[in-house]
Amino acid sequence: MATNLLDFDLEGLVAYCEQLGEKRFRATQLFRWIHQRGISDFSLMSDLAKSLREKLAARAVVQVLPVVSTHESADGTIKWLFDVGQGDAVEAVFIPESDRGTLCVSSQAGCAVGCRFCSTGHQGFSRNLSTAEILAQLWYAEHFLRRHLGVDERVISNVVMMGMGEPLQNYDALVPALRTMLDDHGYGLSRRRVTVSTSGVVPMMDRLATDCPVALAVSLHAPSDVLRDSLVPLNRKYPLAELLDACLRYLPTAPRDFVTFEYCMLDGLNDTDAHADELIALIRHHPHTLDQRKGVPCKFNLIPFNPFPASGLLRSPADRVTNYAQKLSDAGIVTTVRKTRGDDIDAACGQLAGEVKDRTHVTHRIQIQRQKMPITASGARYHD
Ligand code: SAH
Ligand code: SF4
Image (cartoon, rainbow, N blue to C red; front, side):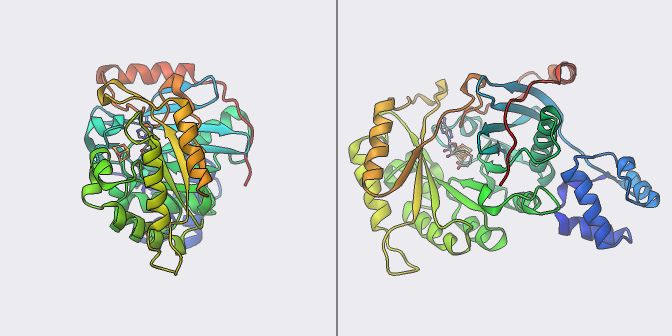
């Protein structure tokens, strides 16, 4: 089977090219053609020797993912559904803002963590994505958007691993993908603008701190172990005290000096004044093992729950979310409320369905999609 070059970070591609008797700078050129210019056809890589192009064509491919559908929301959010085979599909979502363009990327088909409030969790786990399948989402979105905006420069400035799946349960595929996002010869993203979001896989947080420190978001959702056990089953394995310790260990090598805690606002379950008080105490009084202070340096991002019927849960009313945010802010914790984007196209957090229900129609839908391709991508250009 042909080797998919999207599976390699730059060092991996260098090693691969060396096996073919090619020097390092050739691998760099090839990497730039693939990721910076979005070229998958070796014959178009005009500064590579013809002999190398032929060698590559005989044994390698740049295999991207078929797009099942593209939806653009009234607010400019774009959601792509990618077919990853065997009836599974994953989604990536582009969120344009005035000062940045963020792509939300999936790491797994389904998820094994099984959080109560998450539709991906309710689907169960299908499989890990490969590095190539993670990067194919970025490759496709970036080059699609450049074509449609008619620009040569980068459109996606931020990546958040907040699509389907638990990225730290797919660690080996994740790290080369992150390195490619960060690489100046790849997507050249700043470490501060690449965020891994985790439900709290403690040992892998430690490894990430060493192997590829990027911005960290931790899905907290509850101020106590009893409640978190019932919302995020992984808490039974890595309870809050251990999770907060892992956050503190992560920070010294992290590109930011705080952790972002995500907190999904669930009506009556985790959104009362008593929950806010308990949360403030948890964060403020956690012993800081690395210096003499107490507390965990953090920001909170409150996410109004996006309901789906199987969850049996409801979104907190807007005034309760505001009140909760105010209480945290009053306690000196920087808190934002996430604006829900793209909910008219089911692209909001936890709404990523991702199952190709009727596989027989996939090819047909891909064809229709190709015919419909030129969609209008609104949005500005983004710079660091
Ligand atoms: N598995 C990782 C990353 C993907 S989920 C994690 O859990 O962090 C990305 C974010 O969306 C998480 O903070 C998750 O808790 C949140 N989320 C999941 N389902 C949601 C829903 N129905 N409404 C609002 N946020 C949700
Ligand atoms: Fe998995 Fe994250 Fe959903 Fe939990 S919230 S089930 S960890 S994708």
